[in-house]
Each structure stands twice: as structure tokens, then as C-alpha cells.
Length: 181
Image (cartoon, rainbow, N blue to C red; front, side, top):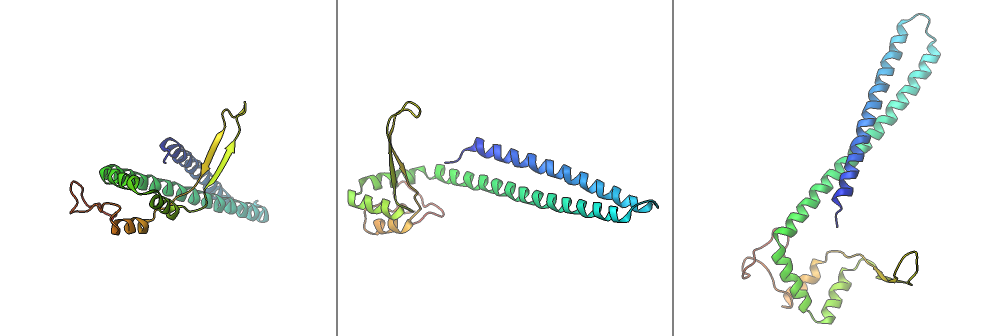
């Protein structure tokens, strides 16, 4: 679900890129200041200086754009990390609720389970079969699918009495913020 090592590697890589870009930007700003100091000298070729200033300004703008992009990516990863922590805490704090829901879903008759799964599928299920070979090892079937959260079907099963409603009045379970039927 969430690979924290890979995520931390991405964060470290982005932080390194941000540091490198900030250092390059500082160097380019220093070059710009040195170029402006050349204006005070009498022997300066103004056309050449103008070209060098324009090239320097283009490099500064490119670095600034890249730096802003990397900072935005870094912030997105940090916020993703915080959201993942919130989801993990939510799941951990409500494990009894989900355990009961899993048991109720398991008790559904096959037709209702099929309806539940089909209502949560985003695309068609793709099943591939690979033969055994020496390079890839043992073969077998591979199944590819994506699911989405569908509270409407769960609400329907609650109304039909097929899934237990877990709220303040349920025995042994408490109402969960942000999770209601």
C-alpha cells in the first residue's frame, strides 16, 4: 500500500535537488552582481555585457522555475505522507469496525458478494496466464484490477439488514468519524 523507504528516498532526492538548485541560483546571482560591477569600468563592451546579462537572467529564470517545481513536488510528498499516516491511524483505531464489516461481507450470499465487488470495480478485471519457463520461474494466472470505495452499496446492504450498522447504539463498537452508513 505505502512503501515508506521508497517515499523517504524520493523526499531525500528532492531535498538534494532543491539544495543543489539553490546553490546554483546563488552562484548565478553572484555572477549577475559581478556583471553589473563591470558597468563601472570604462573599457567594458556594452553589447557583450548586455548579451551576458540576458543569458544570465535566462539561466536564473530557468533555475527559479526548476526550484519552485521541486519545492512543490516536495510539499506534495510531505502532505501525501501526512495523509497516509492519517489513514493508517484511522485503520488502526477502527480495526474492530473493519473486522466486523469483513465478517458481515463474508457472510453475504454469493450473489450479494458479486454485486458488491462489481459495484466497486473501476475497470474490467484482466486475467493473464503465463506458462512456466526457466527465466521467469513458475507460471500461473495474474489478475489486474482496481477498486474504488462505494458507500452506496454498503448503505443498501445495511438497509436490507445484510451488514450490521456499527454506530453509537451498536454493542461493543463506537461511531467512527468520517465513516458512516
